[in-house]
Length: 88
Image (cartoon, rainbow, N blue to C red; front, side, top):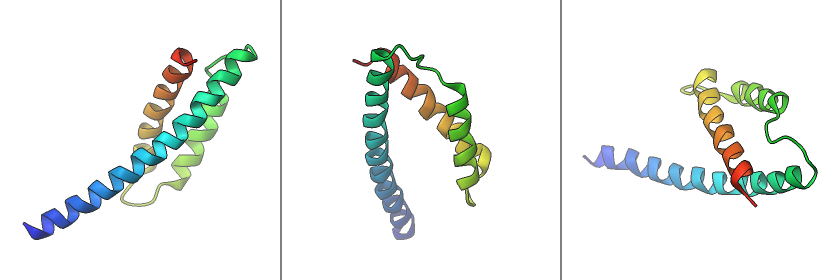
């Protein structure tokens, strides 16, 4: 059980870092949404989304696969667009 708890603690620490990272990312998302609304720019930018997805796919290192990372980022992008559409 000690070994299991050791790995769970690693996951807990990783989750803390992931949420901090997401908070930082979504602060920028919020500002971009404000900028887009003020300047009449469409929230959805498929070319930018593809650039981000290609970039993160190339960052994947085992045990992550490019497909896993892309799927995670598709959800992040989806939530970012919701935030920008519903934001200030």
